[in-house]
Image (tube, rainbow, N blue to C red):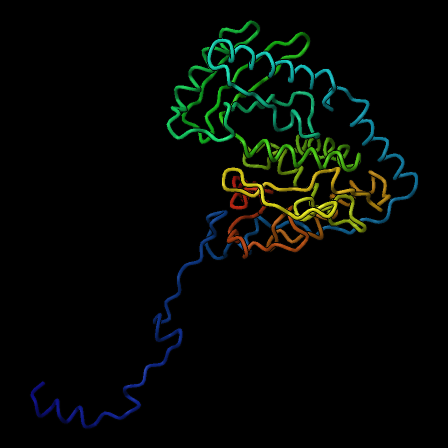
Length: 368
Protein backbone atom coordinates (compact mmCIF):
# COMPACT_ATOMS: atom_id res chain seq x y z
CA UNK A 1 0.00 0.00 0.00
CA UNK A 2 1.16 3.55 -0.77
CA UNK A 3 0.44 6.42 1.59
CA UNK A 4 -2.59 7.64 -0.38
CA UNK A 5 -4.23 4.23 -0.34
CA UNK A 6 -3.46 3.83 3.38
CA UNK A 7 -4.96 7.21 4.20
CA UNK A 8 -8.08 6.36 2.19
CA UNK A 9 -8.38 3.02 3.97
CA UNK A 10 -8.07 4.60 7.40
CA UNK A 11 -10.64 7.32 6.73
CA UNK A 12 -13.15 4.70 5.60
CA UNK A 13 -12.96 2.80 8.91
CA UNK A 14 -15.83 3.11 11.34
CA UNK A 15 -15.80 2.87 15.11
CA UNK A 16 -17.44 -0.54 14.88
CA UNK A 17 -14.47 -1.86 12.90
CA UNK A 18 -12.33 -1.52 16.05
CA UNK A 19 -14.74 -3.49 18.24
CA UNK A 20 -13.64 -6.95 19.46
CA UNK A 21 -16.19 -9.38 20.79
CA UNK A 22 -15.01 -11.39 23.81
CA UNK A 23 -16.85 -14.53 22.85
CA UNK A 24 -15.93 -18.17 22.33
CA UNK A 25 -15.70 -17.88 18.54
CA UNK A 26 -13.40 -14.85 18.59
CA UNK A 27 -11.08 -16.39 21.18
CA UNK A 28 -10.89 -19.94 19.83
CA UNK A 29 -11.72 -19.64 16.14
CA UNK A 30 -14.36 -22.32 16.75
CA UNK A 31 -11.61 -24.76 17.75
CA UNK A 32 -12.39 -26.75 20.90
CA UNK A 33 -9.87 -28.52 23.16
CA UNK A 34 -10.17 -32.27 23.27
CA UNK A 35 -11.64 -33.58 26.51
CA UNK A 36 -9.72 -36.49 27.99
CA UNK A 37 -10.54 -38.27 31.24
CA UNK A 38 -7.64 -38.54 33.70
CA UNK A 39 -9.13 -41.77 35.08
CA UNK A 40 -9.75 -43.99 32.06
CA UNK A 41 -7.71 -42.03 29.50
CA UNK A 42 -10.54 -41.96 26.96
CA UNK A 43 -11.66 -38.78 25.19
CA UNK A 44 -15.11 -37.24 25.05
CA UNK A 45 -15.72 -36.86 28.78
CA UNK A 46 -14.10 -35.66 32.02
CA UNK A 47 -13.58 -37.52 35.27
CA UNK A 48 -16.86 -36.21 36.72
CA UNK A 49 -18.74 -38.17 34.05
CA UNK A 50 -16.41 -41.15 33.68
CA UNK A 51 -18.45 -44.33 33.10
CA UNK A 52 -15.75 -46.37 34.87
CA UNK A 53 -16.50 -44.51 38.10
CA UNK A 54 -20.27 -44.74 37.94
CA UNK A 55 -21.89 -46.80 40.65
CA UNK A 56 -25.54 -47.84 40.79
CA UNK A 57 -27.67 -45.74 43.14
CA UNK A 58 -27.90 -47.18 46.63
CA UNK A 59 -31.29 -48.54 47.59
CA UNK A 60 -32.50 -47.37 51.03
CA UNK A 61 -32.60 -50.28 53.44
CA UNK A 62 -35.84 -51.25 55.08
CA UNK A 63 -35.87 -51.26 58.89
CA UNK A 64 -34.64 -54.54 60.32
CA UNK A 65 -37.10 -56.85 61.98
CA UNK A 66 -36.42 -57.83 65.57
CA UNK A 67 -35.33 -61.27 64.37
CA UNK A 68 -32.93 -59.77 61.81
CA UNK A 69 -31.45 -57.43 64.44
CA UNK A 70 -30.89 -60.33 66.81
CA UNK A 71 -29.37 -62.54 64.10
CA UNK A 72 -27.00 -59.84 62.81
CA UNK A 73 -26.08 -58.85 66.36
CA UNK A 74 -25.16 -62.45 67.14
CA UNK A 75 -22.88 -62.55 64.09
CA UNK A 76 -21.11 -59.35 65.12
CA UNK A 77 -20.68 -60.49 68.71
CA UNK A 78 -19.37 -63.86 67.53
CA UNK A 79 -16.80 -62.11 65.36
CA UNK A 80 -15.73 -59.90 68.25
CA UNK A 81 -15.90 -62.31 71.17
CA UNK A 82 -15.97 -65.92 69.99
CA UNK A 83 -13.63 -66.10 67.01
CA UNK A 84 -10.25 -65.97 68.68
CA UNK A 85 -8.52 -65.95 65.29
CA UNK A 86 -9.83 -62.41 64.68
CA UNK A 87 -9.98 -60.30 67.82
CA UNK A 88 -6.73 -59.51 69.54
CA UNK A 89 -6.59 -61.67 72.65
CA UNK A 90 -5.01 -60.74 75.96
CA UNK A 91 -2.32 -63.38 75.30
CA UNK A 92 -1.44 -61.86 71.91
CA UNK A 93 -1.37 -58.34 73.36
CA UNK A 94 0.81 -59.51 76.26
CA UNK A 95 3.18 -61.18 73.78
CA UNK A 96 3.66 -57.85 72.00
CA UNK A 97 4.19 -56.02 75.28
CA UNK A 98 6.75 -58.61 76.39
CA UNK A 99 8.56 -58.30 73.06
CA UNK A 100 8.65 -54.52 73.48
CA UNK A 101 10.09 -54.84 77.00
CA UNK A 102 12.71 -57.39 75.90
CA UNK A 103 13.92 -55.25 73.01
CA UNK A 104 14.04 -52.20 75.28
CA UNK A 105 16.13 -54.08 77.86
CA UNK A 106 18.57 -55.30 75.22
CA UNK A 107 18.92 -51.83 73.65
CA UNK A 108 19.59 -50.29 77.06
CA UNK A 109 22.23 -52.90 77.78
CA UNK A 110 23.98 -52.98 74.40
CA UNK A 111 23.34 -49.54 72.91
CA UNK A 112 22.07 -46.63 75.06
CA UNK A 113 20.72 -46.79 78.57
CA UNK A 114 18.16 -44.04 77.88
CA UNK A 115 16.26 -45.98 75.18
CA UNK A 116 12.47 -45.95 75.62
CA UNK A 117 10.16 -48.18 73.61
CA UNK A 118 6.38 -47.77 73.37
CA UNK A 119 3.77 -49.75 71.47
CA UNK A 120 1.43 -47.87 69.16
CA UNK A 121 -1.10 -48.61 66.41
CA UNK A 122 -3.29 -51.71 66.50
CA UNK A 123 -1.14 -53.15 69.28
CA UNK A 124 -2.66 -50.74 71.78
CA UNK A 125 -5.40 -48.59 70.23
CA UNK A 126 -8.28 -50.86 71.23
CA UNK A 127 -9.08 -52.02 67.70
CA UNK A 128 -6.41 -54.68 67.18
CA UNK A 129 -6.80 -58.06 65.49
CA UNK A 130 -4.81 -61.26 65.76
CA UNK A 131 -1.94 -60.87 63.32
CA UNK A 132 -1.57 -57.13 63.86
CA UNK A 133 2.03 -55.94 63.69
CA UNK A 134 3.82 -54.92 66.87
CA UNK A 135 4.49 -51.26 66.01
CA UNK A 136 7.12 -49.90 68.40
CA UNK A 137 8.32 -46.31 68.77
CA UNK A 138 11.91 -45.71 69.91
CA UNK A 139 12.72 -42.56 71.86
CA UNK A 140 15.64 -41.51 74.01
CA UNK A 141 15.48 -39.41 77.18
CA UNK A 142 13.99 -36.43 75.32
CA UNK A 143 10.61 -36.49 73.60
CA UNK A 144 12.14 -34.63 70.66
CA UNK A 145 14.99 -35.94 68.54
CA UNK A 146 18.17 -33.87 68.71
CA UNK A 147 19.11 -32.33 65.36
CA UNK A 148 22.68 -33.64 65.55
CA UNK A 149 21.58 -37.29 65.86
CA UNK A 150 22.56 -39.42 62.87
CA UNK A 151 19.34 -41.35 62.23
CA UNK A 152 21.07 -43.74 59.82
CA UNK A 153 23.55 -44.72 62.49
CA UNK A 154 20.79 -45.16 65.09
CA UNK A 155 18.76 -47.46 62.84
CA UNK A 156 21.79 -49.56 61.91
CA UNK A 157 22.80 -49.91 65.59
CA UNK A 158 19.26 -50.89 66.56
CA UNK A 159 19.21 -53.49 63.77
CA UNK A 160 22.52 -54.94 64.99
CA UNK A 161 21.26 -55.25 68.56
CA UNK A 162 17.90 -56.73 67.56
CA UNK A 163 19.61 -59.22 65.23
CA UNK A 164 21.60 -60.58 68.18
CA UNK A 165 18.46 -61.44 70.18
CA UNK A 166 17.20 -65.06 70.34
CA UNK A 167 14.05 -65.81 68.37
CA UNK A 168 14.53 -62.82 66.06
CA UNK A 169 14.73 -63.27 62.27
CA UNK A 170 14.54 -61.31 59.00
CA UNK A 171 15.88 -58.06 60.44
CA UNK A 172 15.64 -55.32 57.79
CA UNK A 173 16.81 -51.77 58.58
CA UNK A 174 15.23 -49.00 56.46
CA UNK A 175 17.14 -45.88 57.52
CA UNK A 176 16.11 -43.61 54.64
CA UNK A 177 12.34 -43.89 55.05
CA UNK A 178 10.30 -40.82 56.03
CA UNK A 179 10.17 -42.39 59.48
CA UNK A 180 13.36 -44.53 59.84
CA UNK A 181 12.44 -48.09 60.77
CA UNK A 182 13.74 -51.59 61.57
CA UNK A 183 11.49 -54.49 60.56
CA UNK A 184 11.84 -58.02 61.97
CA UNK A 185 10.02 -61.23 62.87
CA UNK A 186 9.89 -62.79 66.32
CA UNK A 187 8.80 -66.26 67.40
CA UNK A 188 7.18 -65.73 70.81
CA UNK A 189 6.03 -69.03 72.30
CA UNK A 190 2.88 -69.84 70.29
CA UNK A 191 2.76 -66.55 68.38
CA UNK A 192 4.83 -65.41 65.42
CA UNK A 193 4.99 -61.64 65.56
CA UNK A 194 5.91 -59.16 62.86
CA UNK A 195 7.39 -56.05 64.42
CA UNK A 196 8.61 -52.60 63.40
CA UNK A 197 10.79 -50.32 65.50
CA UNK A 198 10.46 -46.75 64.23
CA UNK A 199 12.49 -43.77 65.38
CA UNK A 200 10.59 -40.94 67.06
CA UNK A 201 7.21 -41.65 65.50
CA UNK A 202 5.75 -39.59 68.33
CA UNK A 203 2.64 -38.38 66.50
CA UNK A 204 1.60 -42.01 66.00
CA UNK A 205 1.71 -42.47 69.79
CA UNK A 206 -0.77 -39.61 70.18
CA UNK A 207 -3.04 -41.03 67.47
CA UNK A 208 -3.00 -44.35 69.32
CA UNK A 209 -3.98 -42.65 72.59
CA UNK A 210 -6.89 -40.88 70.87
CA UNK A 211 -8.27 -44.03 69.24
CA UNK A 212 -7.87 -45.97 72.48
CA UNK A 213 -9.87 -43.28 74.29
CA UNK A 214 -12.71 -43.63 71.78
CA UNK A 215 -12.62 -47.43 72.09
CA UNK A 216 -13.04 -47.10 75.87
CA UNK A 217 -16.07 -44.80 75.65
CA UNK A 218 -18.47 -47.39 74.21
CA UNK A 219 -18.11 -51.15 73.85
CA UNK A 220 -20.02 -51.02 70.57
CA UNK A 221 -17.19 -48.98 69.05
CA UNK A 222 -14.73 -51.80 69.81
CA UNK A 223 -17.07 -54.45 68.44
CA UNK A 224 -17.75 -52.53 65.24
CA UNK A 225 -14.06 -51.66 64.84
CA UNK A 226 -13.12 -55.34 64.67
CA UNK A 227 -15.98 -56.07 62.26
CA UNK A 228 -15.15 -53.10 59.99
CA UNK A 229 -11.49 -54.12 59.71
CA UNK A 230 -12.31 -57.76 58.97
CA UNK A 231 -15.04 -56.75 56.49
CA UNK A 232 -12.61 -54.44 54.65
CA UNK A 233 -9.99 -57.20 54.58
CA UNK A 234 -12.45 -59.76 53.18
CA UNK A 235 -13.62 -57.28 50.51
CA UNK A 236 -10.04 -56.51 49.47
CA UNK A 237 -10.32 -52.81 50.31
CA UNK A 238 -8.30 -52.64 53.53
CA UNK A 239 -4.69 -52.52 52.34
CA UNK A 240 -3.13 -49.10 51.74
CA UNK A 241 -0.17 -50.68 49.92
CA UNK A 242 -2.60 -51.87 47.21
CA UNK A 243 -4.22 -48.50 46.60
CA UNK A 244 -7.13 -48.93 49.01
CA UNK A 245 -7.66 -47.64 52.56
CA UNK A 246 -5.63 -48.53 55.64
CA UNK A 247 -7.33 -50.12 58.63
CA UNK A 248 -6.61 -46.88 60.50
CA UNK A 249 -8.64 -44.96 57.89
CA UNK A 250 -11.59 -47.31 58.37
CA UNK A 251 -11.50 -46.78 62.14
CA UNK A 252 -11.55 -42.99 61.59
CA UNK A 253 -14.54 -43.47 59.27
CA UNK A 254 -16.28 -45.54 61.95
CA UNK A 255 -15.68 -42.94 64.68
CA UNK A 256 -16.88 -40.18 62.31
CA UNK A 257 -20.14 -42.08 61.81
CA UNK A 258 -20.62 -42.85 65.52
CA UNK A 259 -20.18 -39.15 66.32
CA UNK A 260 -23.06 -38.29 63.98
CA UNK A 261 -25.73 -40.79 64.95
CA UNK A 262 -28.86 -39.48 66.65
CA UNK A 263 -28.18 -39.33 69.52
CA UNK A 264 -24.40 -39.59 69.12
CA UNK A 265 -22.65 -42.73 70.32
CA UNK A 266 -19.28 -40.96 70.62
CA UNK A 267 -18.37 -37.32 71.41
CA UNK A 268 -15.82 -35.00 69.81
CA UNK A 269 -12.97 -35.37 72.31
CA UNK A 270 -10.82 -32.76 70.55
CA UNK A 271 -13.54 -30.14 71.06
CA UNK A 272 -14.38 -30.99 74.67
CA UNK A 273 -12.83 -29.30 77.69
CA UNK A 274 -14.09 -31.53 80.48
CA UNK A 275 -14.73 -30.79 84.16
CA UNK A 276 -14.54 -27.04 83.74
CA UNK A 277 -10.96 -27.10 82.49
CA UNK A 278 -9.82 -24.76 79.76
CA UNK A 279 -8.69 -26.32 76.51
CA UNK A 280 -4.90 -25.97 76.44
CA UNK A 281 -3.08 -26.84 73.19
CA UNK A 282 -0.53 -29.64 73.39
CA UNK A 283 1.99 -29.37 70.56
CA UNK A 284 3.81 -32.43 69.18
CA UNK A 285 5.69 -32.19 65.86
CA UNK A 286 3.96 -28.85 65.13
CA UNK A 287 0.52 -30.45 65.60
CA UNK A 288 -2.01 -29.77 68.35
CA UNK A 289 -2.64 -33.21 69.85
CA UNK A 290 -4.96 -32.10 72.64
CA UNK A 291 -8.04 -34.16 73.38
CA UNK A 292 -10.20 -34.53 76.46
CA UNK A 293 -9.47 -37.67 78.46
CA UNK A 294 -12.14 -40.31 78.97
CA UNK A 295 -12.32 -39.51 82.68
CA UNK A 296 -12.61 -35.74 82.19
CA UNK A 297 -15.16 -36.06 79.40
CA UNK A 298 -17.70 -37.72 81.73
CA UNK A 299 -19.37 -38.93 78.55
CA UNK A 300 -22.53 -40.99 78.81
CA UNK A 301 -24.28 -41.66 75.52
CA UNK A 302 -28.06 -41.68 75.31
CA UNK A 303 -27.90 -43.88 72.21
CA UNK A 304 -29.19 -47.38 72.95
CA UNK A 305 -29.29 -48.67 69.35
CA UNK A 306 -28.09 -52.25 68.95
CA UNK A 307 -24.71 -52.99 67.42
CA UNK A 308 -26.43 -54.64 64.45
CA UNK A 309 -28.42 -51.48 63.68
CA UNK A 310 -25.27 -49.38 63.98
CA UNK A 311 -23.49 -51.67 61.52
CA UNK A 312 -26.30 -51.30 58.98
CA UNK A 313 -26.31 -47.56 59.69
CA UNK A 314 -22.57 -47.36 59.01
CA UNK A 315 -22.96 -49.04 55.61
CA UNK A 316 -25.99 -46.92 54.74
CA UNK A 317 -24.27 -43.69 55.81
CA UNK A 318 -21.28 -44.14 53.52
CA UNK A 319 -23.22 -45.64 50.60
CA UNK A 320 -26.10 -43.18 50.52
CA UNK A 321 -25.75 -40.20 52.84
CA UNK A 322 -22.14 -39.02 53.08
CA UNK A 323 -21.09 -36.83 50.12
CA UNK A 324 -17.68 -38.16 49.10
CA UNK A 325 -17.51 -35.62 46.28
CA UNK A 326 -17.68 -32.58 48.54
CA UNK A 327 -16.99 -33.55 52.17
CA UNK A 328 -14.05 -34.67 54.28
CA UNK A 329 -14.29 -37.53 56.76
CA UNK A 330 -12.93 -36.14 60.03
CA UNK A 331 -13.38 -36.68 63.77
CA UNK A 332 -11.91 -33.54 65.33
CA UNK A 333 -14.91 -31.19 65.07
CA UNK A 334 -18.68 -31.34 64.84
CA UNK A 335 -18.83 -28.73 62.09
CA UNK A 336 -18.88 -30.01 58.50
CA UNK A 337 -15.54 -29.83 56.64
CA UNK A 338 -15.50 -29.55 52.85
CA UNK A 339 -12.86 -30.69 50.38
CA UNK A 340 -12.72 -27.09 49.16
CA UNK A 341 -11.68 -25.94 52.65
CA UNK A 342 -8.77 -28.39 52.55
CA UNK A 343 -7.84 -28.04 48.87
CA UNK A 344 -8.49 -31.76 48.36
CA UNK A 345 -11.05 -31.48 45.54
CA UNK A 346 -9.06 -33.72 43.20
CA UNK A 347 -9.15 -36.75 45.49
CA UNK A 348 -11.89 -39.41 45.25
CA UNK A 349 -11.95 -39.75 49.04
CA UNK A 350 -10.70 -37.34 51.69
CA UNK A 351 -10.05 -38.53 55.26
CA UNK A 352 -8.32 -36.05 57.55
CA UNK A 353 -5.78 -37.21 60.10
CA UNK A 354 -7.06 -36.10 63.54
CA UNK A 355 -3.80 -34.29 64.40
CA UNK A 356 -1.74 -33.81 61.22
CA UNK A 357 -4.35 -31.71 59.45
CA UNK A 358 -2.35 -31.57 56.21
CA UNK A 359 -2.41 -35.35 55.88
CA UNK A 360 -5.14 -36.95 53.79
CA UNK A 361 -5.20 -40.55 55.03
CA UNK A 362 -6.70 -41.66 51.72
CA UNK A 363 -4.23 -39.87 49.44
CA UNK A 364 -2.97 -43.18 48.06
CA UNK A 365 -6.41 -44.45 47.01
CA UNK A 366 -6.67 -45.16 43.27
CA UNK A 367 -9.57 -43.67 41.33
CA UNK A 368 -10.84 -47.14 40.48
